[in-house]
Length: 235
Image 1: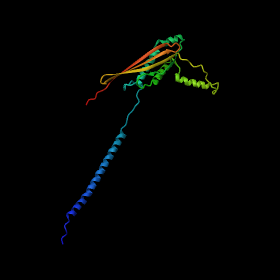
Image 2: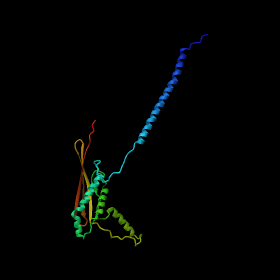
Image 3: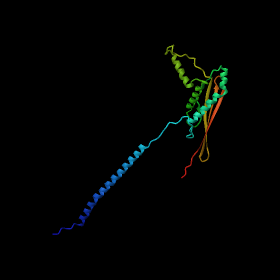
Image 4: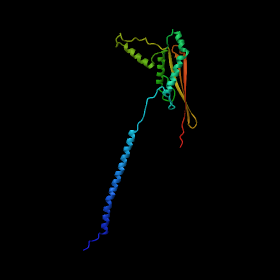
């Protein structure tokens, strides 16, 4: 008896069984390939990040630089140095020495005021002016108000009986200042229509006042002007 020919239904099942494993294998390989590509891309990104380095170096603090339109340490030094040279070169100093047997005047510096809309470290500027004047050896200095309050507290403590009389410092021996040096920084900003050009102007003024008489012995000013122009970008 001849073998029975397979039915159409059997042939269809055979085709499905033959095709399904191939499709499953192909889908699995595709998923693995995508996963591998993602892993390689991530590893490449990490490698690129780890290989990217930033550079930094020390620069000369006395080198004049204009980085933006705001007050900078260059502005501070230029302004303070100019005003120190000016106050030491004016007649008041020699006149005082002539009247007082060549003795150098005693000065106290009040903190320079910031009258601009910027955040300016005027304490640093005040300290810079004071340091330059002290190191000139042409004037003498006493501590500012805040320091003197702390000194007074210490003197009171030393004379409270808690410290031995041999080491306690006496009150009434501090040196009084002859002059007070004070000042301020102001600014103004001007822009042309369209905002392409901008000018920033700074004015720093200082004055020296005789504490006993209230007379202003010296005034000085330093002007700074910065001009900026935005660069255009072509397509």
